[in-house]
Image (cartoon, rainbow, N blue to C red; front, side):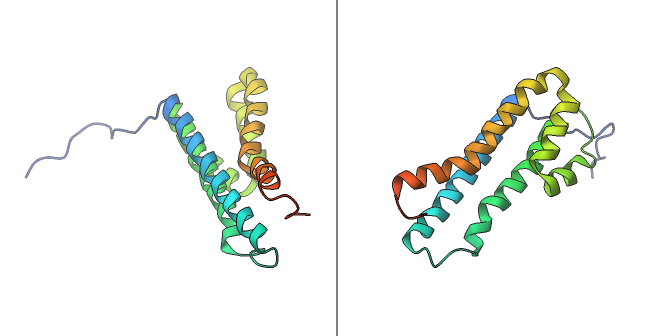
Length: 138
């Protein structure tokens, strides 16, 4: 039997490229889930208002935000702490506070960029759906 390796445990440190890829995949998953829900709603407006399919984009978004903050904190070599719980319960508000506190001057660019990311995941599917199925959401 071999001895366990001595020394500090190796901690995974993601790169900025991995963080960006994760964000792209998470936004695409939210976008796809929301667009699928809207397709089902356009097919039968009386059905699907409070189904699991309606909550799926929100759950993907919450999990995506929590994983993002975990990846960012690990990439920067910091403890995750209470940020993880804050972003799960308060979402974008905590993300913007985090960006302002962690990135200081760069937050002036990152906060508007995050608004674009949230818009791509939440607002864009509604715009696309209104073009694909006109009159279905009136």
